[in-house]
Length: 154
Image (tube, rainbow, N blue to C red; front, side):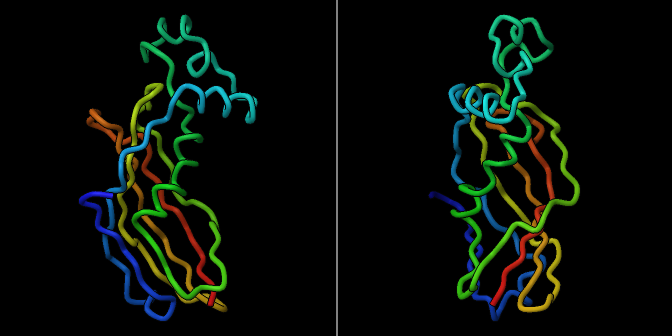
C-alpha cells in the first residue's frame, strides 16, 4: 500500500473518529472472470456484463462490471485503510444511500477512499457510518458513492 492514509483506532477510541478521512486504497482490477462468476452466482446475466458483442453495441462500448459486484469489493479495500482493534466482532449493518455514477469497464481498476460521517454509541459498542467513494481509474466520476454502516462490538 503506497500513499494510503490508514485510519486505525481501538474500540475505546471510536467515539473520537467522526470526520476523519482515510484512503485511498491500492488499485484493484475487476477482471472479466470475476464479472462472469458474479453473473453466474447472482443470476444477473445482462448482456452488458457477459456478452462482448452485445456490450460493444451498448452505450458503454464494452462489457462492464455489475454495480453490486463493484460495491461488494469494499471488503479488501477497507482492510487496507480502515481498522478498529480490540473488538469482539464487527458487522456490516447496512447501507444508506448507494449510487453508481460511472461504470467500471471489464478489467478496469477501482480504489476506495472514505470519511467517517457519523459515530453513535449502541448497546455493546459503536455504530459507524462511512461515506465511501469508489474511484474508477481514468474516469471523472466515481463508480460508487455509498454510506456503509458498520457496527463494532466490544
